[in-house]
Amino acid sequence: MPITPAVQQRIDAWNAASSSFGPLLMGQPGDWAVEREKYNAVLAEHPTPDGVSIRQIDMGGVAATVVTPEDAEEGRVLLYIHGGGYIGGSPAAYHGLAGHYAKLLKAVVYMPDYRLAPEHPFPAAIDDTLASYKWLLDNGHNSKSIAFSGDSAGGAMVVSVMVAARNAGLALPAAGVAISPWANLEHSGSSMKTRDGIDPTVSLAGLDLMAKVFLNGALKNNPDASPVFADVRGLPPILVQIGESEVMLSDAIRLATHLAENRVRVSLEVWPGMFHVWHMFAAILPEGMQALQGAAAFLEGALSADAAQTR
Image (tube, rainbow, N blue to C red; front, side, top):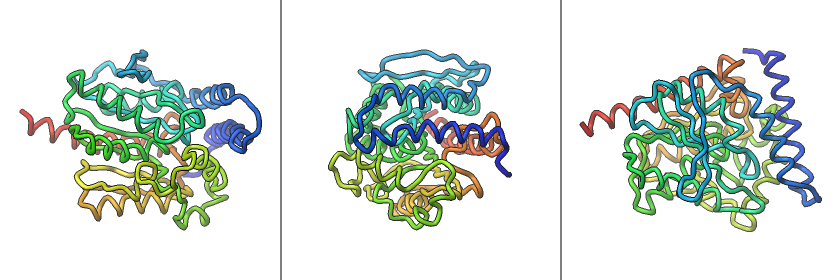
């Protein structure tokens, strides 16, 4: 489907907000808090659907937002990990996407407000998200009633936090959905060049700057930062959704292949013509809602199967 003027207007606003991080990423003086607030305000313009409530909580020392649909199934939880290149984004910007997810999956959505770089570089975001998941388990939630999802940096963390949970000896969630995952900070996939300039929202130059600030001297191929290099054995089923126009396309495909080669049940969806995290536009872009519906159906299958086995 061609990009409509309404969608293009939102893309333009998103790009303008993203580009304002540029001087800060290059070390020029400025206020990270101010630029983050502007960025989040743009994403927050995506409307929150009717039929959900929103509240703030603390998840074991990590601030979080909880989105609850009117018809939530008892005990069903989605841990949603927001994107923003590890330098921006917050749950406050994701009420729309999380609200749609909550209604489709009939799940209570928890969104941790993990710490951001450069003040809190790698691995702070992963540590905070893992702490949030442990909090869910410690508060009586059955791991098999929990699913993960996330976009961009959060899409990579769907895998990275599962690996960290496994390594910590925690029970793993039922399944996960990685949306437009930023899975390889080496940026070695061919689409980083072939889609650069075609991708309407993300550029290789911007990703290089964000990776440098986030890693703060850590290696680009550190498996906790780039899950294409991680030991992923034993992880639950994962769906990878990526837009064909994205510079991250090749590395998302590599992530799916890496999961498959390590005996993780994986599904890969490549959406022709779609851009980075098109799901965010679900209220005005049919493909955005369709992708979310597919993600919810994937998670529903895993959650229902595990629920049946525990009866």
